[in-house]
Structure formats: C-alpha cells, structure tokens
Image (cartoon, helix red, strand yellow):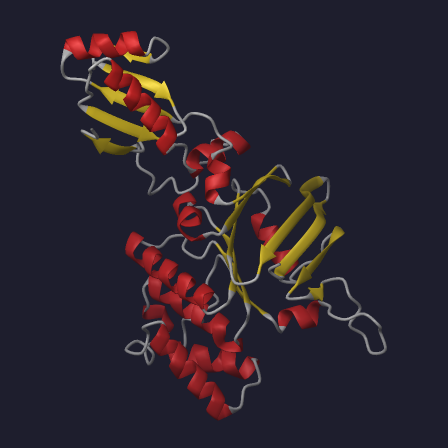
Length: 338
C-alpha cells in the first residue's frame, strides 16, 4: 500500500459564524499530484494554510509527511511531530509571489538558502542548480522586478525548493499566467513528481487539474462534494452522447427509424443518442446503423468534462478559468468514422 504524504480527517474551521470547513477528509499518496477544486471562497486556501501549519484547525486531525499537526513538540513530550517538524518537510508557494522585486533573482535564492541555514558554499551551489533548472540563469543578476509573470512564478517555485521539500503546496500557482507560461509550469510540476515529490495543488483552471492531477477533490459548502481520479469524477455526471450527422435525407430518415428514442435535429439532419462514449457503446450504435444499410457522414462523441463535473457538484455560476475558457467546448469528434 502506498504511504500517504497527507492524511486529514474531519478538519473543521470557522471564522466567527461562517463555517469554512465542515469536517473534510483527504488522503494524498506520496509522489502524486492532488488537486483541490472549488468556487472562489470555498475554503481551498484555508485547507492549504492548515496543512502547511500557517493556521490551526478548529477540529479534526491531520498528518503531513508523517507528522501529526497537533502533536506537542515541547521537550519531554512523548508525541512526535508538530508544526516545526511539518515545516521542515514541506514547501509552500502561495497565490501571491514571495519574490522580493528589489533584489536580483540570485539574491532571492541566496536569501532563501540563508533562511534554511545552508552553509554558504552549499547555498550557492543549490541556488545555481535551481536557477539553471528553472531557466533563470540569464536573468539571475537582474532585479526580480524586471521579470515577467511566468519568470516570477518560476523563481518563486525555485525558492520553495531550496530546502528540498518532499511535499509542496501550490496555491493557484498559474493564476494570471499566459498559456505558454502555464504549460511551462505544468512541465516543471511533472518533473518534480517524477523525482518523488508530492504536490498539493489548488487551481482555478479545470484543465490544469485534468492535465496534472492523479486525484481530484471538489470542495463545496465546507465539505468534499466528490473525490477521485478525473475519469471517476466525469463518470458521476450524466450527459454523454453521440451525435450522428447525415448529408443524405433518405439515410437520415432510415436512421430515425433505427433510433426512435434519439433526439432529432431535422434541419441539420442529425441525431443525438445518449452514450457513455465507450467502445462497446459505439459498436452497438454502429451495428444498428449497419443493420439499416445506412452510413453517417459524421460521428461525434461528447463525454462530460471537469467543467460539467464542477457545475453539477457545486451548482456554481463562478466559472473557473473564465478568462481562457472558450464560449463553447468542441466535442471530441471523429469524422467519417466508418
């Protein structure tokens, strides 16, 4: 059984009368990417703050990197762990960059090395290695205030890695980045995980979770509405279908007879059939079409995506990734499939 990097049970947090977390459970295996989704204000950042020891939970228990967040770290205590032990094992990159724009990228790295009490020579070596890894060598001597948004996020993450954490919390790390910079950050995250690092990710980009996460949890009204792999979550939502389009009116009429329960579009000469998009389901549709001697000009498969999951589970009109989301989502299509 894979060891858990993060395990939380019944976490609760309130601010006055507002309940932010109402008893959530999380399990994050080592060496994986775990994505936490939810509308704005759902409590994603609160979860990160609790698990990274920045604030305390009002209730529940959590273990991070094998350490109990609530353990008493005082001398003579029989318990092991506590906030200090957790902090030594993790790195945190928040929504807002921790980069100091008044000093150079290299100086930011060396400052972080000093904070980790690395010997001077080792600190310079670690800083140089990370600047190279994150493609920041040419900019290393320039003030960080001159960096682009993507460069600042890379430097921020490089600074997080100075202490060689095995668990990294990334709280909306690509917000505001252009598509190229976001894809560059995705590649960096994949490389970290391939090295055995565990990544706990909150994001406003549903595509990001779909691309990166081994497991995803959807946070809504202080509870986990659903949790699983992207494919498992997509199967929770109905609405998958196959669309058959015809160019020959006679073929269309024959298909209508073969699929009397299909949704018709007589103007477009198209039929829409409920389907989970599986190979078996497609074969059944094509076999029935064959039995009439009819051939579709185009077959298009639509399966629910994480957008559909998000809306179904949260009922939210707060659309993640609204700035980059297209007005309509093209279905996965395969023309002239036969």
